[in-house]
Length: 66
Ligand SMILES: [Zn+2]
Image 1 (cartoon, rainbow, N blue to C red):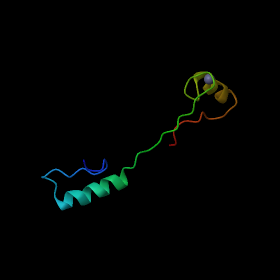
Image 2: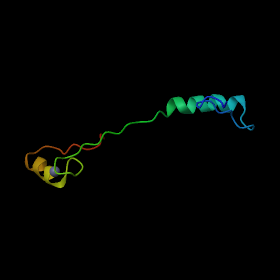
Image 3: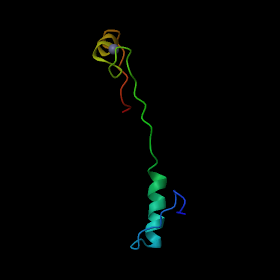
Image 4: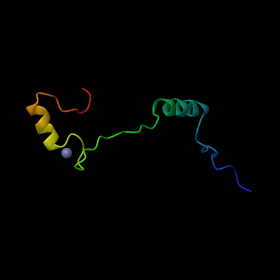
């Protein structure tokens, strides 16, 4: 029988302080899901045509938050 899959013993050089640090790091660095907008034409939204159309209409293309 082997250990449960989630459990791996830490390497010998790991100190208790390192484990605290690791908890902290994992807490502050959760994985993020990045949702990208896709245009119906297949490019990232806004594609160049949408960008043009938005500018013509006096709107700002929606990009990253500044
Ligand atoms: Zn498009």
